[in-house]
Length: 117
Image 1 (spheres, rainbow, N blue to C red):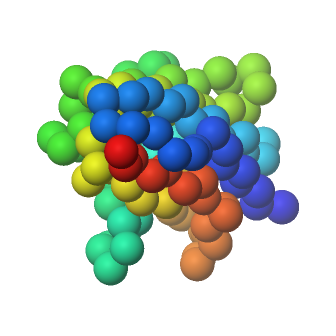
Image 2 (image 1 turned 180 degrees about the vertical axis):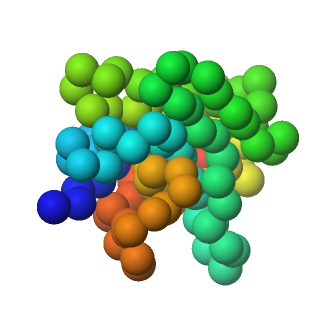
């Protein structure tokens, strides 16, 4: 059974930091690459960062240098450490395998990040 559970979001002031977590079911996490996405109100969901089992990472230009993706293969968990947050980072953040093979329309519940003073 597919399961993705995101947590760690919240309200933070500009310049602040948050660390998101995502726990995935074995069947999902065993896929090689996991990623973090976000969707802002009125916008399409965008892929921010991804990480292979080997630890190789790739970031979108919009967050490179501020966000760091990591994974713990022993606990089927990935993380997104976010620093120097900006109001435009406000969105619901989701994790998912990359590519989303076999998931159809399934997404986890996401975790809300709001950056505001």
